[in-house]
Amino acid sequence: MLTFNDITVQFGGLTAVNSLSFEVPKGQIYSIIGPNGAGKTTVFNCISRFYTPSKGSILFNGEDLIKYKPHQIINKGIARSFQNVELFTKMTVMENLLTGLHPLLKKNIFPIALNLPSVKRMEKDARDQAYEVMDLLNITDLANEKVSNLSFGFQKMVDIGRAMIVNPQLILLDEPVAGMNPIETEKISELILRLKNELGYTVLLIEHDMSLVMKVSDAVTVMNFGKKISEGTPAEVQNDPVVIEAYLGEVETHVAAK
Amino acid sequence: MILKLLENKRLTIGLLVVFMLIYPFLVGNSNYFMTLFVITCIYAITSMSLNLLIGYGGQISVGHAGFLTVGGYSVAILSSTVGLPFFLALPLAGIMTGSIGLLIGLPAVRLKGHFLAVATLGFGLSIPQIVLNWDGLTGGYSGLAVTKPLMFGSDFSLFYVFVVITVIITWLIQNIVKSSLGRAFIAIRDSEVAAQAIGINISFYKTTMFVISSFFTGIAGGIYGYWVGFVSPNDFIITNSFLVLAMIVVGGLASIPGSIIGAVLFSVIPHFTDSYIGITNIVIGIAVVLIILFKPDGIVSLFKMNKQKLVKPAGKGELLVQGGEKENANI
Image (cartoon, rainbow over all chains, first blue to last red; front, side, top):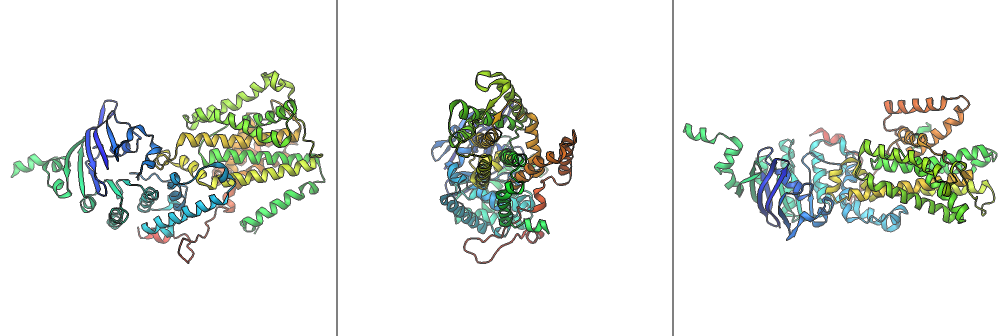
């Protein structure tokens, strides 16, 4: 569904992503893992079109995404959450979700300024839709709470909810459980599995929490210094010596000691 | 007690409307007091427009006096030179000012924060100079007379027309900021990255903000022209831009009632202080400092106008109130 073809991203002299290729199949949970600074978020920012790769192409359902601007990506069916939640902090949970619906709402100023019945109806439908998403996330009772008053865990949920509400085909989750306690992590991993199993989304996941990655992923790509160093099922990747070296960096001495 | 009563939205709005209707009788048709009221309306419209831009959209403008001037002169030229009737000239003044707003908004899309402030400052400073020196169109120093609409024989009926227009504009702006458009503006203010990721075209909406804001400000300028019957280059200068900015900061950013409160306050204060030279600016300055120190959300935060509403979720019977404390406790 999403194909990276030989993508290279450079910031000045620094190569953040180096000739990266991978393919995310439809209906799967695909994880990208790797040590800090491996270029994982850069991959997301290329898909979201915040960065333009210097080389290569990103195909989504056969269409090259490079020619689109960041705000057009959602219309292609790709939504994302952010590593450091980028919520609209002064808005309530409800308003954040409604803002997430932006691409689907009519934006003609004249009916809006006159608050015509069609606009009122659209707003009501949008609210119902937002309640559905909140029900799914179990945050309905926080609907009118300002997001700046929520704990980080709930803010992450709202961030994911805002990405889900437009019913994308592919959802990009950037470290959904960073900074969460084990109970919250458990909740999020259940949610990610539900996204795949019940709602039929394809999920591309960046995560440091290995227990989550191993539990939910269908396939994993491991990156280090901008390059793909391993790929496969969670079990394969876990036992790959290259991966262990990238994470622990001590494989030789370990082996030598034996 | 009074604060409690004012929290009832309908009651407050009802009282306001009654007050506006009987105002001319309260002040015995005094031209001075009616002018004070119309000026307040003009500033209310301008501060709501500016609040849409700054409070909701996060785009700073300190050049709104320029838009007021453009609106006033548009009305003067359209009514006197071209001879258009009131109900055509006033909206056209808005459209002309909106077009200028579009011209300002296009480059402003690439500017942020202080740089945008300086760019709009330049606009506000240059408009009076342009008006002064474009003799052929604007009459230069001597200004332009505005033909008062004949259909409203007296200032008395004109007063009501302007009150109605102000109420309508308030309603329109309120609808805009509560809609998907308004949410897009706030989204841009809070996080441009997230706004783009959820499909908000930032440059388009920034330009739209400028156009909407300058359109309504242009109408306010037009109302000024019609009421005073005369426009001159120094009617709205950079001081007025800053005064409107002070209004929205004191009244409350991102709040329509706040804009109106600020506009009323700073239009009425000069009435009491103008007899002592220099006091007006000191009072306004102190008010701004006090508000920023003690009530950064503006006077409107005293009224809790934005208090949480009880919302009924779809398909569920019971009412939900905010349950933040309970939920946050176990995290």
